[in-house]
Length: 410
Image 1 (cartoon, rainbow, N blue to C red):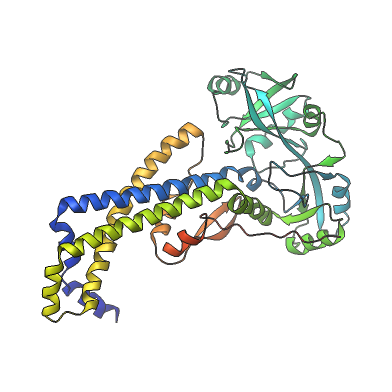
Image 2: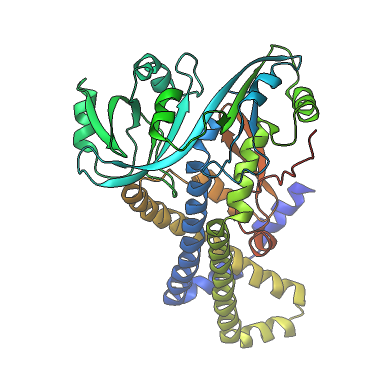
C-alpha cells in the first residue's frame, strides 16, 4: 500500500511547485509573509516558555517529596503563611521521615555595585540540611549559619559583573537591606524571572531578622521527605485527611503544576502571550489564503484546460494543498532561524532562559497532536504543545498546567 502510494507520488507532476517557482518574486513575497507570521508565533512561544521556566525554576529544584502550603496560596510570591506547628503534626503521619520549614518573601536590597535598590526574592532555610537541588548552595550552607549572611544569585538581572568578579576571587562583600548590613558569603546560579531580579538564600534566623514584621510561629512552606519505599500519593492523602484545613499537601509534581496553572490560566501575562501566538497564526492563515487565492486567479485558464481534459476537482484541490504545504515548509525554517536570533538578543538583555526549544518549535509545525516533555527537576510531565489550528485558537499557551482544586482538609 505504502509502496504503491510512493510510486504514484513519483509519477505525479509537481504542478504546485512548478506554479510557485514560475513567479519567483511572488514566491519570495509569500515566503516572507509566512516567515513573518512564524516569527510572531515562535517569539511569543519562547517568551511563554521563559515565563514558565523562570517562575518555576526554584520550585523545580526543591528537595522534597511532598510540599505543604496554605490553601490560600496563589503562587510562590504570594504563598501566605500557616502555623509552624503543622510541620510537627505532619511528623505524626506514618511514612513521613522529616519536615523542614521554608520562609519565602521579597524585598528591595541595595545593589553592592551600583547602590541602587532592586527587588529580590529571599528564601530562609535550615542551614543544616539542603532544601534545594542546587550544588553551589549546598556546598556553602555552613557560611549562612553566620548571622546576617546570604548567598547571592550570580545570574541576577542587572549590573553585578564587578561584584560577582570580586566574590569569585574570595572577597567578602556587604550590602544593605532595610538598614541592616548583610554579608554576601558566596554565589550560586539560578536566574531572574519576569517578577523578580534575582534570589538571596539565607538561614531562617537571618530571614526573620530581615523581615521584622514576620510572625515567628508561621512559615511559608514545608518540605517533606518520606521514608524510602513509601507512596507519595498515599501519604499526601493521609496528610490532607489528618491536618487541619489551614494547610494543604501536594506532591512535588502537583506543586509545580499548581504554579504552572497560575501562570498559564490566571496570570494576564500568559494570556497575552497565548493570544499573541494565536494572532500570529491567524495572520499566517490570512497570508497563505491571499497567496493561494491570487495564484488560483492567475491560473484560471490553465485550471479550465485541466477540467476540459477530464481532471477532477480532487486533483486541482490537491495542487492547491501542495502549494500550501510547500509555502508552509519554506516559510517555517526562516521563521525559526530569525526568531531564534531575535530571542537570543532579548534573552541577553532581559536575563531570560532559552524559552521554547527548536524541537518544541518543530512540534508546533506538525498538524497532529504532539507531546513535549517539560523538565521538572528529575521528573518529566507530558504536556500538549499543539493541535495545529485548533490548538492555537483554543489554548492560550503551550503548556497546559493541571488545574488543581483545593480539597477540603480536616
